[in-house]
View (cartoon, rainbow, N blue to C red):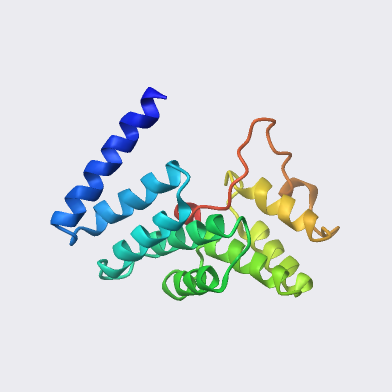
Length: 173
C-alpha cells in the first residue's frame, strides 16, 4: 500500500541517519519499533540491542521492549535471551508488570506450572483495578489451569474488541 511504502521510506531514512551517527539511543529504539511495525522482529531486536548499549543508566522499559521483541521473533516462546532481558528489568524495576508476566510464562514453559500460576496470581492481585492488561493475565492464568481462589472481581471479562497484550512496563503495580 501507499502508506506502507511511505513508512518503509521513512525507515530507510532513519537507517541512513543512524549509519552517519549511530550514537542516538532514541533513534535506535525508534528504528526497533519501526521494524516491529513492519513485521521484522529479528531486525527490531538488533536495533533494540543498539539502543540498550547506548543508554546509561539502563532503561528498564527499553529492555522490556527488547525482551518482547525476542518473544515475537520466537513466535511467542520465551527464549533464554528474552528471559535474561526480563530478569534484568526486574533487577532495575522489581514491580515491572510486563517482566513479571513474561517471567511467569517462562516458568510455565520450563514445566513449573504451579510456580507460574502463583506468579500470575500475585500479579493479578496486585494489579491496579483499571489496568488494561488484567484480562490478559487472567486468561494466561486460566490457560495454566486457573485458580478458584481468585475473587470474581479480580477476573474482569475482556471487552469483545480488547487487544490481547502483555502488561506494559509503564503500568506496573
